[in-house]
Image 1 (cartoon, rainbow, N blue to C red):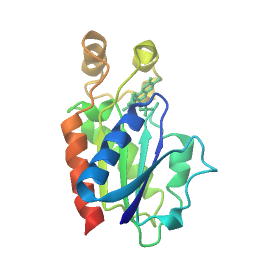
Image 2 (cartoon, rainbow, N blue to C red; image 1 turned 90 degrees about the vertical axis):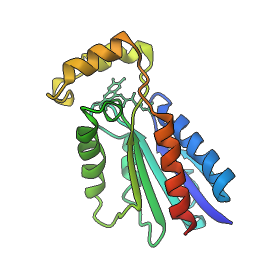
Image 3 (tube, helix red, strand yellow; image 1 turned 45 degrees about the vertical axis):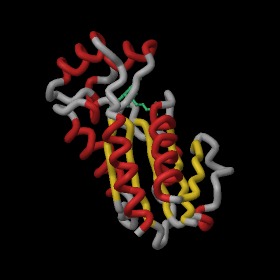
Image 4 (tube, helix red, strand yellow; image 1 turned 90 degrees about the horizontal axis):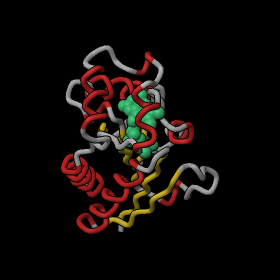
Length: 181
Ligand SMILES: Cc1cc2nc3c(=O)[nH]c(=O)nc-3n(C[C@H](O)[C@H](O)[C@H](O)COP(=O)(O)O)c2cc1C
């Protein structure tokens, strides 16, 4: 059976939920054995050598991955297949998606020249209600000039969860196929 490790960094749990959905699809539909690990406990993380494939994920806060998820990217993955995703409120807004993909994903991956992911994705995020004011008033440099007014108003008005579960599931299938080939 193919062994897959999903490791993630989270602050509010949104990334955890996306990882759990992806795990379910990989196990049920792609016959993988999947272990899932919160990198808050970095030291006890399962040994990479036990796995064929790895998914690395992080939530984004003020433009940053969690420290441990970012650190994990610098591992030597050898010939393992690696897929990477982020959970980011900006990535869930069409006007800000490109900004999030480039700045929070492409640039972070490029800091690790040996890392060549077979798949990458930027998903929307979920902001706990009591964190919304902090998000809305965050340091200006993390609020992209493009459309920032709209996104903040919209999040306040309607919702604080802009994850697209169909997109997350679709990506899980894409990764399932890549990991099985
Ligand atoms: C204080 C704060 C700052 C945030 N900063 C950003 C940001 O710079 N860019 C972004 O896209 N999302 C930002 N977000 C939204 C998070 O990306 C979103 O809540 C994400 O789903 C968090 O994932 P996690 O729960 O796994 O940590 C911020 C949220 C909070 C509460």
